[in-house]
Length: 224
Image 1 (cartoon, helix red, strand yellow):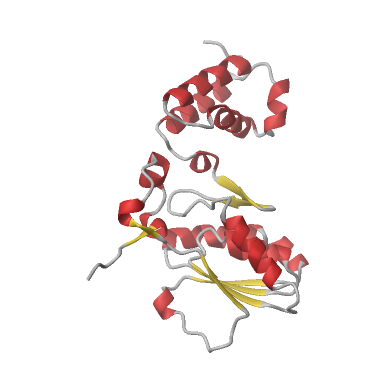
Image 2 (cartoon, helix red, strand yellow):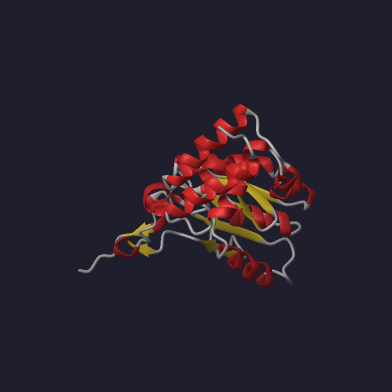
């Protein structure tokens, strides 16, 4: 079996296209770069994989072909200036949420030492982005799910130096929203990206249905 990087990329791309994956070539390149520990731009310089690298790449390709999210296979997701740890049990941050962060930054441009609370924090994407892009801010990140909270904890720890450099702080709380009791006026901004899709409207993509935490996506609408 050939260990040619070019041949393996072409094969993976065809597999992904047959599985209905729109970003087939990009996904193949990202997985190969992940296996090799290099950037995507460095792939063009590679001629051959070792047998061990080939086996690892083929294993990841099989999982991606079965529609396991790319981010679960690499264990990370880019968000604004951040690279966040993600995986089973936490919602994968979407690019659209970056617009929410941008709007908050505009609102706080004239506020000194802003205090922010982020409900349904998940991986901490919003909270950490704000703490690393705003100086002298205090962010409280609230997440109920134990699985998601672990990713929140890891991501905050990983960005500790960047947060401290801004003279900012993040407090993380593993509590239910109904347990969150703060005095009125405690925060300049209350932000949340909660479950907002009715059950009957959840996207049918396998990546979403089978791998995103249901509690992070949908809510039940009472008709009575």
